[in-house]
Image 1 (cartoon, helix red, strand yellow):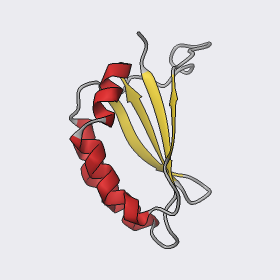
Image 2 (cartoon, rainbow, N blue to C red; image 1 turned 90 degrees about the vertical axis):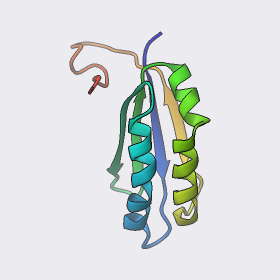
Image 3 (tube, one colour; image 1 turned 90 degrees about the horizontal axis):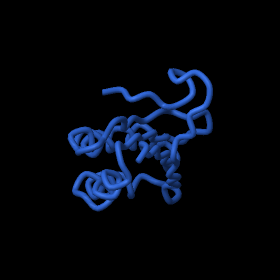
Image 4 (cartoon, rainbow, N blue to C red; image 1 turned 120 degrees about the vertical axis):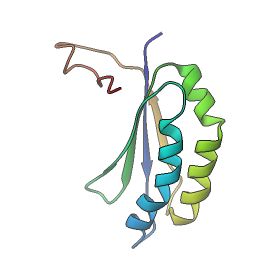
Length: 108
């Protein structure tokens, strides 16, 4: 089975972007220690949202993460700071072209 990529878009309440980023720290650090976590990183987007890009070794690893303590911590810490529900998209890579540029690289 190939890796699983997830994009989660967090929309902070007005003036709460930095508080949201700070609140995500504990959940991110806990997730980095989870089995199968290949990438779990946040990025600023031009539209004011904070986008999480994740890569998991297997769908089972992602499922365990979704049911685990780290995601519960992340949800607890971020929910009061959000203006809208988190939009989560789960994808399976379709590598095309140069292997180094045609898929999200394994970073570990």
